[in-house]
Length: 72
Image 1 (cartoon, rainbow, N blue to C red):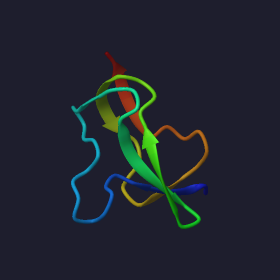
Image 2 (cartoon, rainbow, N blue to C red):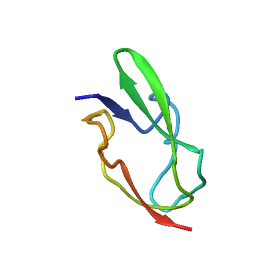
Image 3 (tube, one colour):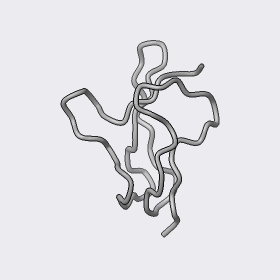
């Protein structure tokens, strides 16, 4: 396990992205917590979120896909 995937900045905040949202390259889409450090993960592509592949607060690995994005 590399870290833990979070869809929100904190429990009271809305999700960074949801299915159907448009994203642009560089937009923060989630946070990965690793060793008590919270790292903002930015989209590498522009497009529409088609599917979120990881449940909130789930462990993730290196190079694991987190989202399916339909390119714009």
